[in-house]
Amino acid sequence: MKQKIIKKIVAASLAATFAFSPLVSHACTSFLLKANDGGFVYGRTMEFGTPLNSKLAVTPRNYKALGVGVDGKPGTGLNWTTKYAVAGMNALGLPVLVDGMNEKGLVGGLLYAPNTAQYQDVAPADSANSIASTQMLVYALTNFATIDEVIAGFKKIKVNRSVVPSFHNQTVTVRMTLHDAAGKSLVIEYSKGELLATVNPTGVMTNDPLFSEHLNNIGNYANLTPVEKAPLVINGTNYGPPSSGSGLHGLPGDYLSPSRFIRALFLSKSAPTNLSSTQQTNTAWHILGSFDIPPGAISLSASNPYGGGAGGVETTEWSVVADNKNMMYYVKMFANTNVQAFDFKKADMNAKEIKVYDLDRPQTYIQLN
Image (tube, rainbow, N blue to C red):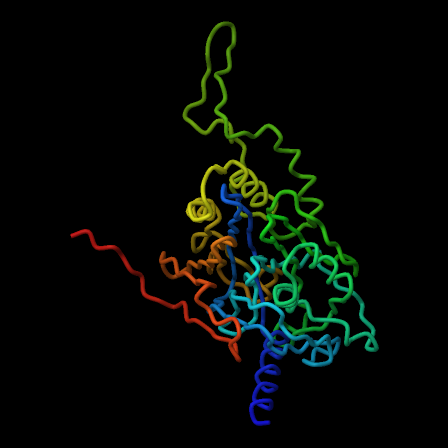
């Protein structure tokens, strides 16, 4: 009896965390790489305007989760028992997953979309079949193994507009990107109160605008190619490019979401496919370097929605690479260049409680002399 009471308390604490943690400025970029061994490697950055103090949290199987209902209270929404174990990044040191991978290789994250996301208008009578927007990822990863299962599952539930007191009593407006072990990708959005579940042919996702607008924008860059351009010939005289890189001349290099989408698309699709999953993790880190925001490059005012009303300097708080064949989840924090690794094969998937790993480690170097 005592163990049951403790388990209920922990479950309530987890659900309360999902409900009340302040998720603010997400300016994120994600992509998927194909390997030659049947595996896929996912890469993602997390940008924030205020410190996240993220840790890696592992949620086991058969864990009781309380859905947050329309009133913002744990337990008044859709309650569920986790089917699959999940490891991922929390926010503000709390078990709120904004990125993660489950034991079946389903991987993805939440990306901030304050200008487009609008969830379903759920009546109090339907609250028990709904979850809060902050629970979208943890619900998907703990319940489903494939993209098809996610689509079918989210058609059966609703995401309500419950507010988070610590987030200025506002709804946390996010979209979700997911990839399964077979390499199928999905974007889950809510626009004007309607669910938009779109299979993603690009494997790439960033923030606003709507995903359909990102896809429409691709045609504007149809001229880009990783193949070097031949010199322009005018009246018998050659005018060649000043250096290599002429094929991708015009690739947007700023930090706007549409620009990051195009950059991630061309860099990920230009990556070699004759590498193993382990080798592609290195490719992913190199691509992620193109989205690392140097401190001071983006200064947010308090009125900017991507600052969550807090303002501040936006930085790449952390980057993630996940190998869903070898079941490895790698993290690199802003404070240093160390890559920290979580091995699903060594984890206790049937633990009785959530385990949290502190990622605040000192910078280390390989000494040469």
